[in-house]
Length: 210
Image (cartoon, rainbow, N blue to C red; front, side):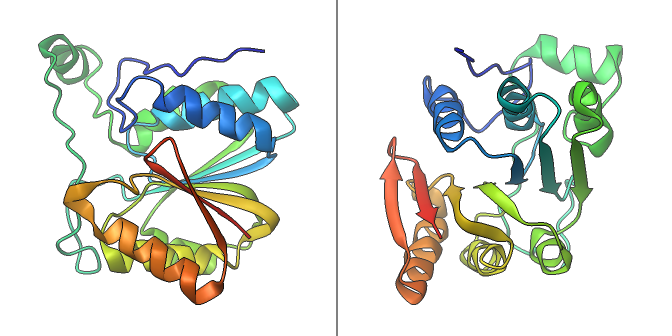
């Protein structure tokens, strides 16, 4: 089984060649059935993960995604980094703005991209710091790529401690992001405070195993 990361004509943070394939291979090795992605954005990673999980387990998997799905910044996310949603490719701009008339960074658009897996997905619009506190599910694998401020990342990690299964993995993206140094600092502090193991993979990913 050889699944390659596809971009589905949308924006993705996994732009560098090989990063998406590396992520899918890492997930494949862990073989999770209950997956959580914090920071869905356009849904590209979500779709790739669902395709992989379906190839591994058929319909016997669950995917949960959390995102603000909003260009606005509320009081809790003040000064947070907002994803760049504008396309540099004019054809993509025309396609989304004038042909299908759908904002790719919207709950409706992500649901459309993941329609194939309607029975397996639960996409939640909301602040991850709030949603994770109210969550009752347990996850085998978490891909953390939400807010990039120190406080946001730290609170997400603290909340994830309660929802990750024993032996489960949290894979944090953008550990090496220089313009968002709060990501690295939050992860490092969390590791020290909880005495967890940390591995840096493919330069950008921080693997935490509970």
